[in-house]
Image (cartoon, rainbow, N blue to C red):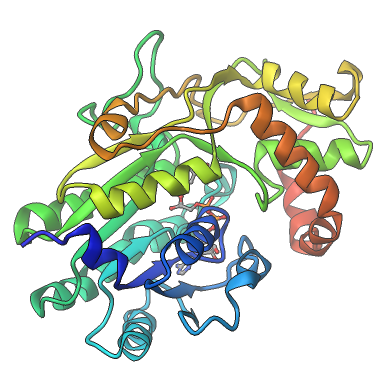
Length: 357
Ligand SMILES: NC(=O)c1ccc[n+]([C@@H]2O[C@H](COP(=O)([O-])OP(=O)(O)OC[C@H]3O[C@@H](n4cnc5c(N)ncnc54)[C@H](O)[C@@H]3O)[C@@H](O)[C@H]2O)c1
């Protein structure tokens, strides 16, 4: 029988990748909003992780952190045991998979870590999860996926959940592999899973290799920002709080076997977005540096989230103007966090990545 919202909201959730940008927002929201939910965070602490993002949960009797890799069955078993201990029952009621290698540019250097985490890791979670579904313990599995699985979308179409998958980078291909495995489990084993696909996120705590935080950080440092190619690539942006709220809505009120899109209803080309950031930082166009375009760079992503609005009662709250202002102010106020994450690994990645045109 399908899980009820009340049953899920009183359960124990295994959240993977909870020290990442979006997973940590989800953990903070769940911990604040649902006083009966217990949360286990399984994260390998890759370069993109920051435990600071979940500092407010440390010490909570309803929270536990397990360091481990989702592509290693023994680590996943350890997280399942932590769920059983925390719940005093058999294991997790829900499993929400955020863990992934998430940066497209890095996947173009080497795709192997992407396949390991984003495809193999999902298979390991599914196999472990299936045992708990059979025991009647695990009621829902949610796979966090991306709009990039749809590939380039031509004007004026906006991708809907029934559109075919058409991937362009090792990142999007590995994410598509993961969600196809989830769909295979739904079909073959009536596995109670949901897939969500979301557009580009931005907001506080964002790792400064992605466009918005990278540009804010460089402008704050008085440095130029690298714009790919002609800057006319269009993206559909969503504030991370709206995405995490969408995942919560899908988890609690979604239907098994369904896919839900989430976007911010904000479509903008990279150059126009750059100009908004320049204006927030009070810098002029001389701070733009055009760099060689990313290989295989998709020109446009655009999502239609009408299904999520209609069926989950979810709506985006943030406008781009308010969200960028809040994000910019957050980075100004959290300069010490930026200093901490700008380590040697980051510096060598940046040098390798941006070849000036
Ligand atoms: N950032 C976006 O704009 C966006 C948009 C749509 C979907 N998504 C998806 O949302 C999810 C979270 O994205 P994010 O931006 O928070 O990513 P992130 O890179 O900020 O965080 C990923 C987290 O997963 C952990 N991790 C990586 N590999 C792991 C493994 N093998 N085992 C355990 N933990 C591992 C990392 O340590 C990190 O804490 C990803 O699945 C991503 O594909 C992201």
